[in-house]
Image (tube, rainbow, N blue to C red; front, side):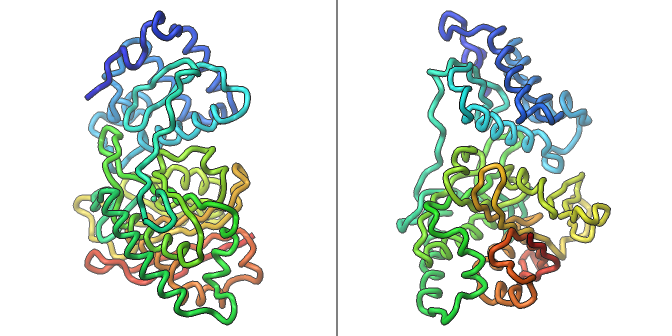
Length: 397
């Protein structure tokens, strides 16, 4: 149900706010470094704020925004072209980062609530607590996390409830921890070396993307992402590491500054997309085609997947793994995301099975264990099942 206008912009006698105050605050936000160098995000934020102030909040739907703000045709497919959802998620992150910075505590608050494109305005004292997902992943040492696709696909893939995710995670933790503790290594394995920089720096945040409906409302976690999360929590558990799980659209910039983080998913995890934009290997999307691009060869579509009605079934997927010190948070991040769910599953397998990392370590550049690292993977897709991961390229610096 759409929010009432009163819930979007309460009368001045109730909040002490008026339209002029909100517009002044909007100008401050859009003038900040977080927004001023972008065209897409300021356009969307200004549009929804002005529409809400004018009493048209109930008209702020995904399709309408795609047409009015981004120039899409009236019949465009919001599943194939999720520009509004991705932009709104990024705006939420940037707004959270803006208010997290010192000096903005006493300013009027403009929020774009989760699951809605209708902004909310309030005085700073009325700032609501950050929404947190249920913190019951594993009764071991966790609390919450991870976007796209397993034995099915993100845009049309199976989604599951958080309680199912918790059960899957628990089973994987028990199995994986037994595997690792039962076989002590005589020397650090390549897998140990990959995860070593993440350990002993406090709690690790696991951040997982969620699926959204046509109106941008979250409605579940892709099974591929949940399975990958379960594999990675098993690795962390085997090393005695504490972790917390949080959904991508609930995690704030402040959360990512608290310690190391693992981001699971690609196009459904806006934090991962933000990070990838500054890397050599990045995610891209245009119409029915998704691809991983090498900035040194930007015209190539060698690592691409095209899916849609009337197109041949998928036979291959690609994934990107990154381990880097994020210059924005000064914390170590690991990301694992496929173009589709099959790739995400392959990334999870690669990061949790010693034999794959051992093979990579034998041909990796010297010193990769302590460097920033990106690995591009591919996997065969046969009858809706992903095959083993295979490295197609890597880069360390």
